[in-house]
Image (cartoon, rainbow, N blue to C red; front, side, top):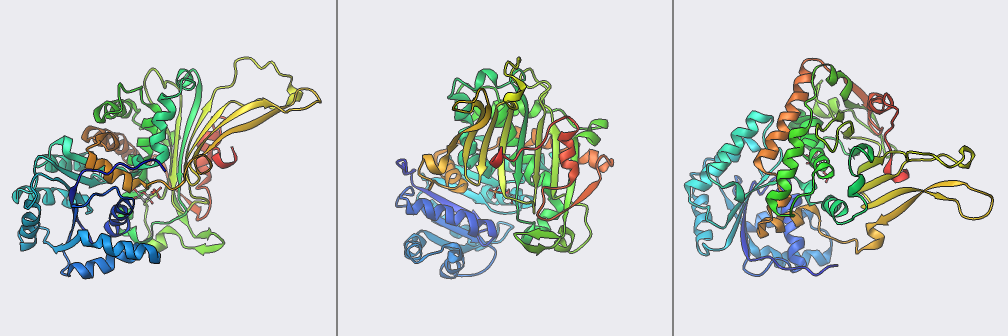
Length: 487
Ligand code: BG6
């Protein structure tokens, strides 16, 4: 494990501290960083939510997600950093004053306000933070996706937050940007001379981005039913991955250099509408099926009513710029699919002249597989000669870099990394306002196309790769989805 550099001391206020996100992700992330010695003495964690309870009661509930006896005793020591304060959503009650008094004992310290809340109340909470003068020069606000439901609601939220916080203190989380392999994308592209000269329409045939989950909507059905896969996954995670594959080399890795390049890609994404929509969009919803050998219900049964919400989307996206003209980016994501796997596949073009005799075997173009999860790694498929006598026989083999084999596998998870990046003020790993709004503009056009009846909802059995129309999207163009594991 690389040496961990502790961050400066900070206070963090987690609003919505009794919710799932805070208990499952944020507190455990802080706890793990603390266990690794990255969180210095003097940090304070103020958990705030509506329910009335003591700090002790809160800690007992919050500790539920910490497993193992060794961890339990560490948790007891970590818990000393945490206090719980009941607050109201209007920003009037005494809890707000308690928070102000606590923070004011050390006014110069870095302050994080984490809104683990629905985006509809981001504005109200920012106003309350402003009203109580909690935001200092060294304050940062952390927002979770989704920022809004469409372009206009995102803009309203961004304005309400922007009325209290400068853009340089707003950290909009897309947890995919905290994943190890996603961060590695920039290194892979820009720290290796080999790839960049062919990383364009001359060298690349197409790009595939797949984020498949075996989980269903589960307990989040109420939220999910209003969002669907397009808003929940594509508008943010998949578009961020697409951006990192497609950006021009930034002049540095500083916050705005990378984000400005991502914005250019988002603005160059062709809006999918009219006849293009029917050809380029597929949406599906899982029906009853089998997951891991056990029967799994359909989405409508989980939601408790008949619904048109999509749990699967496949999209043929195009980037209208010099580098990517004519190179399709196929995106797909779905819940209750056959396997959990997130990967980016870059399919290169065939060599211009095939000089090897046909009976030697099939020539295949190079393929770069970037696996985000599980089994993070990078694999480059190459043609090689089968060694030994017997003439020229071709083999398609991987140059394989498995992270688990090459490095210490135990590195911080996305939330841990992102929280420490907020403390350090590293904006590069967070979405800027104009990026979010540009992503919504593109997504809104798809929603509109669906409203206009562009693509019907196809059912697929839980535990499969989605509706067959998802495969047709590529097959029609003489291509197919690859499974990076067996590429
Ligand atoms: C979240 C979505 O942002 O990402 C969830 O809201 C989804 O629906 C999750 O399950 C997937 O994240 P990961 O890290 O498990 O791929």
